[in-house]
Length: 460
Ligand SMILES: [Zn+2]
Image (cartoon, rainbow, N blue to C red; front, side, top):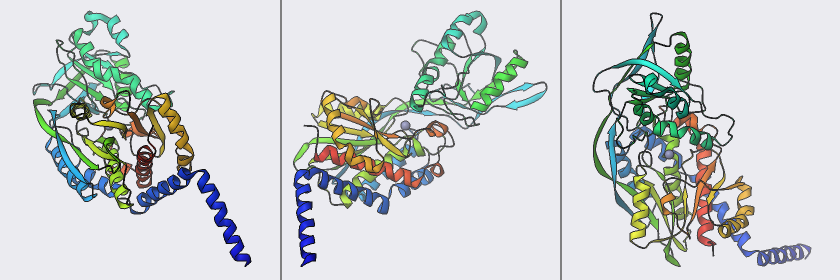
């Protein structure tokens, strides 16, 4: 009898708390089942292994990018999505070639330099450029030197990222203009080539590539990034011999633009099928390393989101899409095309989420949303805090989804502990081995939980 009474009391208590906050109970149970599914049965780590080891790096326009598109489509089909299809996207086609050399001789000793061409750089026409080096930190310093000091020389931008910025993305953003505009600014003053210190916070010998943007009407000069160690060494050697002759040879080539595709999978909504939520990352990578953190992890997490929702039997109210965008690195063609096609076909989004900050421990979400939407998101915090998701910072969602921006859509980016991201970013060291299985899975589960909240509660 006593037992029965206690059971009765327990049941009534549960009933009361349930009726007071029906969403909190059912939503927290649903989020728990999402995490359980990913942490116990997750496939994202093995998918990442395949993408990195069997396909490898996959610059847009390349054959391996095409292989990645085919793999993405078949993997999404296996995830039991309702519908998987390709959206044609025109992309550039550029190759680094097989030969890169940078070096000089100091006091009779040859010194080879760890460097790699910037994405989109012109080559050196099968010849070796030999010239003196002029070192600067900023565009202002370069301009102050003027054409007399720069003409016929190689300009060397040697500016470390700002290590005092705790947000590593902000530190990277501070160095970005030099990689983008440095070669054209140097060419305007008659430079024959341009070298930059890699955009990294690490102190190692890996050069970091990344797109450079030649200015229309300015001579295109070869451009390469030096590793942090090589940049420091060159700077030191220039102090000992300001007239040292630097040799540079690059075998890059540009070809006609070509057609590739975004890969799209969807689970159809049961109540509002014409309201969409898109989740994605970029399938392309730079052509060195394996594109593991950038952005293989975002790709396999987006696939995992579809697989998980299907595996736990969730029937979304709205239509949920995973989009594997092609060519984020070299002009954002995939993101631009996706937004244009959605607009042309009148497809309405309520939300989008991107993962492109590396597969590190998730800490929350970047929120590019209205004040009203932000208030709604605040009410979700008690459901997400048990999973160490505390940081909901305004702004900075992601490059691929940014073209979807309008008055209604809520844009999010997975926010991770990014202190090591720029150690690997765009290098030969961005490899599968440097991704942690548990951190990757926590990111996939966090993304799926946010999709669930957007879908089941929404912003209205
Ligand atoms: Zn990326």
